[in-house]
Image: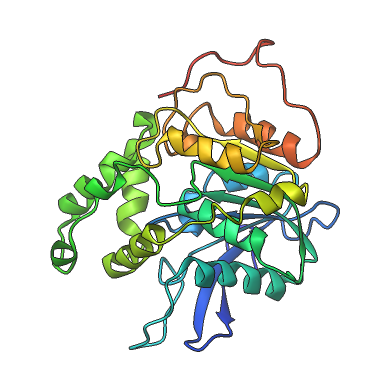
Amino acid sequence: MSDNHAISLFRVPSRTPHSIAYKVLNRRRTDATPLVLVHGLSAVGTVDWMPLAQGLAKTRPVVVFDNRGMGNSTLPAGAEPDWGMDAMANDVVELVKHLGYKKIDLLGFSMGGMIAQVVALTPRLPFSITHLILAATSLKPAHSDLLQAFPSPEESARAKTLEEKKKLVTPLIHNQDLLNRRITESVSARRPSRVILQQMDAISKYNVRARLPSLHVAKLPVLSIHGKLDRSVFYSEFAYIQKALPNIVVAKTPTDQFGHTWYDYFGTEFWEGVIGDFLDGKPQRDLAAGEPKSARL
């Protein structure tokens, strides 16, 4: 089986058994802590994390997966599973157990950041989390322009043309250099509207304000990545996370003027350095020494 390209299916034990599609990049690397990447609303993780996941996998195993009902992840015919954030977090827990990891690093982006928070807050985890990265996320329903980009339930039920699908995802893509690639990936991967609506409902009910400070008490190292141009999860949401986690580390970036898909700015190698240094316990790099000064838009 190809280490970097094969998609595997793991059947999650639950009242409505479903399968999670995943990849493990650099699986054979055993001297570094595996990094689990959790993507967000409407995302297909085995697609949308590339090429960042490939870059991060140069130095450690990296796990990417499709959230329940998305991409190559499957649901039993006629089943109506639990779509709550706790249930999606349990998918992560069960996947890590399935892979046999006793400790992991965890990165959650957008809705995936909410899922990652719930995983980290889960009592009696069968593995330890050594580092947590929260990217463009919130600890409650976020102030956002995102909902305007998605159709109503009635509109979602109607079959769409390719051009309509492109129009739907274009507002979510901030890096014009990657626009065509992201559009192609977005419309070619399986992203059922009914699942996206369930994810949106889970986001609307999410709130861990009272619980998140326990991660500060536990002294879990946490890194934040969030740009001030983010219209999907407004940057103002970071203040709530910072209040709950006063020792959170803010990633140093060439500028804070970047949007929601943060990994599409500054180049993959930049994020390999930021994330890799944090996970390896190294100090953040001095951007005054040769790093680019503006976002690559």
